[in-house]
Amino acid sequence: MKTQSLIALAVIAFAAAARAEQVAVPVHPALNAPFYFTLGAFFPSTTTQAQLTGNATGAGTVIDLEESFNIDNQKTVPSFSGRWRINHRWRVEADYFEMNRDNTRTIDRQIEWGDQVFAVNTSVATQFDFSDLRVSLGYSFFKRPDKELGVGIGLHVATYDVSLTGSGGNGQGEDVLAPLPVLSLYGQFALTNTWAVGLRLDRFALSYDKFDGSLTSLGLDVLYQPFKHVGFGAGYRALAIRAEVEGDRHILKMRQVFQGPMLFMNVSF
Image (cartoon, rainbow, N blue to C red; front, side, top):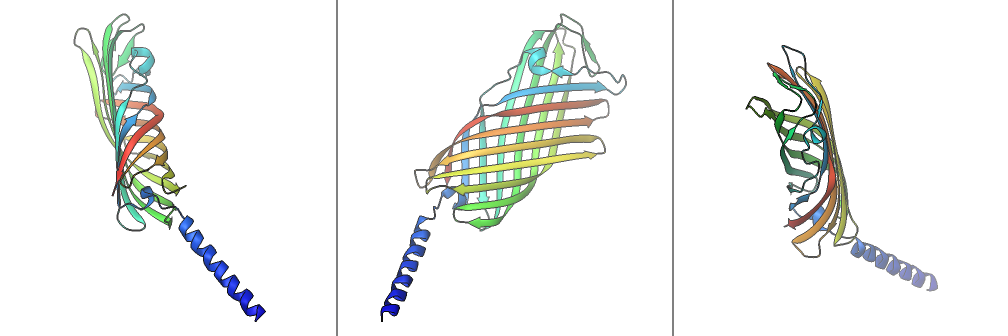
């Protein structure tokens, strides 16, 4: 009888512990809501090197745009993202931001840009527009209500519009659209029902025909969602791009790094 009582107590204790464990598992909307959208502000600092070489001359000056033309190396820009969980493991997501900069400055050295040569003490207007659209299809190979790990494949569609124009109106510009395929690793972890963290790494490297380049992207988020459908977050983003694109008349070489904090509001349902 005593043994049976102990067994009964053990079963009850085990059931209570299992129930408590189930209750204790946090359920955060970022890991479970079918739709998740953010709108925020990105505060990147950036360094940019560019070179436009004429195929005929083979000459082109390597330019540090922030230093040579005093264009902003820090700026506040809007950012957008969205995610659709197709089912328990599959998801589609997208992110977008753009950073457009321009300035006019009298240069203190000769600059060769494509087919143009800008002499010392020339007033040069610089325009540098950049945007990045990231789309990805992800598969969570490990998925629980409070945590997930996954891999993805997608594109970073980077666009560049770069031009230098002298005071006499002579100038040279180059537009580049570069859809860069990437492989991704991601993870999300619910700390409580209202707090969660997320991490993502994208990587790409390719040399083919008239293109050579690489891309590395890192995202880290801390999420706070005190309401059923609305929450807030803070994050960090880093994006490094190296690209060399050969056109019919010119070769454009770019090296660029963006990095900085981000604040956003999210809606999930």
